Image (tube, rainbow, N blue to C red; front, side, top):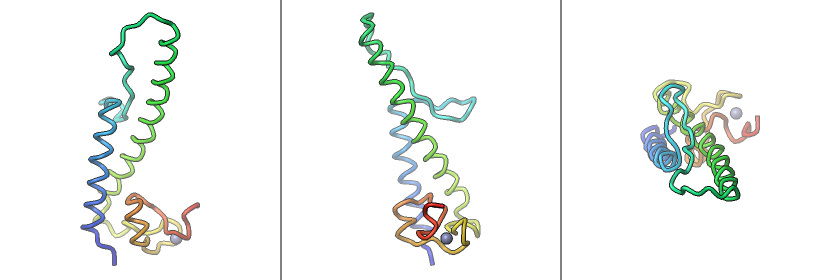
Length: 117
Ligand SMILES: [Zn+2]
């Protein structure tokens, strides 16, 4: 039997970490509910090379922000569903997901056997 309280704590811990990380490089768009990277405006240089560097930086942060945001929303989703009967059940075979897998990835939706499905 899965210890839901423990999983919930793990999820909440990871959620807080993700939110912190996201806040350090972006902001939540209240319209879309998605996290967006904010351009670095701390340096005011007109050098086109460093502007290009900053743009690459921004692109990189953008894609990181998107990844972290997606992870955060799957965690929030898991937290919302934690008291439902389907929580921690494999989407493929319907069996309970292994506790060590849930610990490694609290938002896991499949058991180890169906990891890649
Ligand atoms: Zn399965």
